[in-house]
Image (cartoon, rainbow, N blue to C red; front, side, top):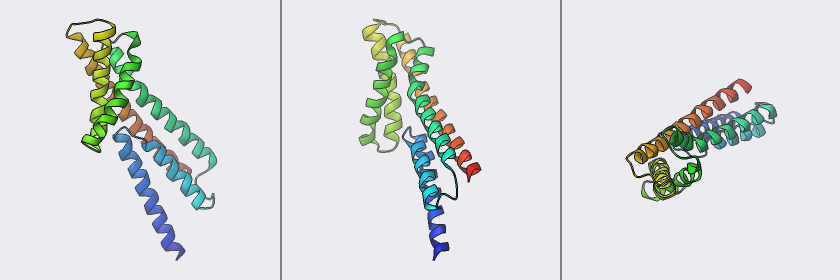
Amino acid sequence: MSVVLSIVGWVLFSFAVLAGLFLDLLGLFGNWVILAAVGAAWVATGFEHFSLGALIVLAVLATVGEVLEFVGADIGAKRFGAGKGSTWTVLAGCVLGGIAGTPLFPIMGTLLGACVGAFIGAVAYEFVVMERRSGGIAWTGFGAALGKIAGMLAKLAIGCVMVGVAAISY
């Protein structure tokens, strides 16, 4: 019976890790799911596999992934000409866009909504606060959307590194 439970446990662990990577691709909390799966496996195996040190490294990596995703849209907007104060409107646009997009298209709506929200946040800042009226504000919004995508891909890459760290620490 214990062999069956082991197999079921490791299958569930694998599904959790894959779900975490999929959630990263959508800009959600996938790295935290990976960390939780490794922590649960560590406890379930009687602290035989993985280690506290590995969990700490995974927690640091998950935090770095969140920070990269969080600032990606802002960096993209600034590279495409956004004003210095655009950070909060771009980030608010990401969050509000993700929330608004989720009910419309439950999985992809979060991703698309966050990108559109970053675009709108950057454009709104440039138009209202900076009083720019040229076509350059659309370019700034495009940079914010690209930065959001780059941030999500960086978070996914961190998730893949987390899987590698877990495999090495096994």
